[in-house]
Every structure is written in structure tokens, then in C-alpha cells.
Image (tube, rainbow, N blue to C red):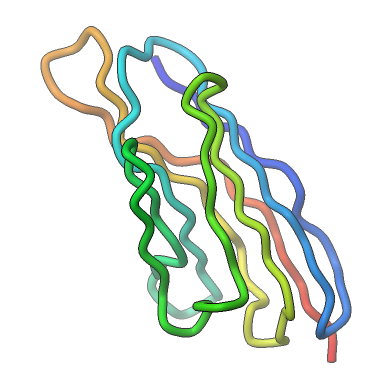
Length: 120
């Protein structure tokens, strides 16, 4: 069994910064991609940023230059540094990890979500 626990959401004014963190625990052999997604009511969940276990990153166009994703493979953590926040960044942010354990297939694991609210 695998668990992802997020922290760091909250309320911030436009132009401010927040840092989200996520730690994976449980039956883990290898963590492949780790990423952050976000969702607002009535819309599908969208990719914000992803980082491979080799360190390659990919970002949504809307956050490029403002957000930075990083991971610590030794600690099974992934973080998202969010700068120059805008009201349109308001959403529930979810941590995601593709985890290889002792089962026959990789597990696509999700955190419980953390609210980020940016006021104008």
C-alpha cells in the first residue's frame, strides 16, 4: 500500500508565493514520475508540473517561469515552489506519483489534495 501526504496549501495574495510538499510512503521500490495537478470545480484535473526520476521536468504553459518542481529521491518527496501567484492559480492541488512496489503493476497514487487560494 502506498500513501501520498501533501502539505503547504493556504491563502495568499496575488504576487505572493507558496511551497507545496508531498511525501510518499509505504511499499515502494521505485518512484517513477512525480507531479502536481490541480482542479477547480466543474473542470477536469489538469497537469501543473511533472518531474521524472532522472530529473527532467515539464510544466503547463500557464505556470512556466513562475513554478518550479523538484524532488528528493532519497526522501521520496516532491515539492512545488509557486511564485508570482495569480488568482487563476486558485485550485485544489494534488500530488501524484507512479510507484513500482512489490505488486505486478505500477501504482498511480494520489494525495488527498490541498487548497491553494490566491486573492486579488
